Image (cartoon, rainbow, N blue to C red; front, side, top):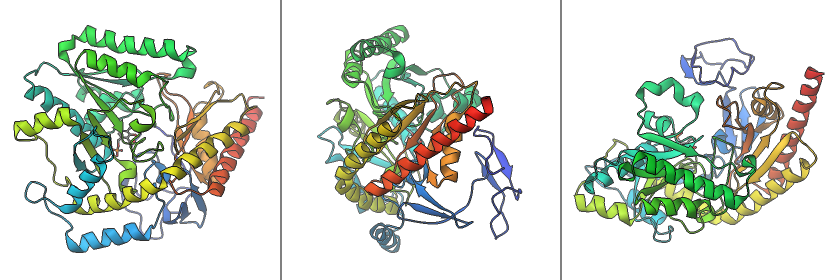
Length: 463
Ligand code: PLP
């Protein structure tokens, strides 16, 4: 079939026969994580053209909330070519480079003083690993090596390196690698207000108490940091925090003197409607360490960032050496492209806010009498539609909708089939920041049509 099951089965497809015609060129051996996908030949604006001639409207910025300016942006392409011609590479430990310096200055200047230094890696996962290493060095420099625990949330996704899988908690992704995941990664509950059935105030108080109790149980002197996404991305299908959540959690961190790390890999870089997501949803709370990736390179380059505030920066600068380094750190082409991308993002923020509101309003209107749609929510151009379809009726309903959307010409993302019941069934939309009003309406129409088709089909199957 066109799609393999969406599990983490790693199939080796060499030259398999699939419904999708193989590339005209001899297929090379490639490892696919979720079955062989249709081949995309080209993209322009926010539309992909597939090998078989089909066009797919991109509701997901390339599939993973990355391509935030759409494709083939001529300015970005020109910056990339110019930097490649002028200074493609210099190892950061041998030579600095201007794009790296400029990007760090540009980003930190927009953080309201929260962030003062930055380093650039190549993926969100590496940014998470690097943030963990910075937390570690901070406490070593503080003379408190016993502070080994880092508390994140369940469920959460923070990357696919071993540390990323460990600090995150999506059972289906993590279980396989359990032998390599230490128990110094601990978890508290990811807020899902509506499902909790609690009032916002009571729920926030309960979650803050859970963190406080967890820290107390581990021994406050043993805890290094708390890590959370300002807006949850893939683990539960876009979830802005309840009101008061970040101030309450920050107060607990402060009480125990632990660092607050914010993972903005998916929700940041303009996605939530402000350059940094914490500026939209954290009610004045600022991170000690922040990670960003995805939209930062706009899909043109593979770049991520770790930004640190004064508390951490001062310690590491005073130590005289930051004990972390990679070959492609602060890569000049990556940084030059990212600088060009973020300049464009800044000008598009009003559109992100307007189109996001439009998308949520249109979806809420379309689904208002549809009981199978449990929730429609969003923050900026980051939108989640959660379903309430019993899994015995249709396991992985969201995946079914996503596949139907694709057949109907829309690229979306399914959050589907959490094995421990903590993950919902949801469709995520995260369109490019320059998406037009009519394009958003088309995305909504295709999604609504696809949901209706899947529900009608389900009714027939279960009749
Ligand atoms: N953190 C969050 C919140 C993410 O959503 C992701 C990727 O989806 C990562 C980290 C890992 O980023 P990458 O896939 O670039 O390694």
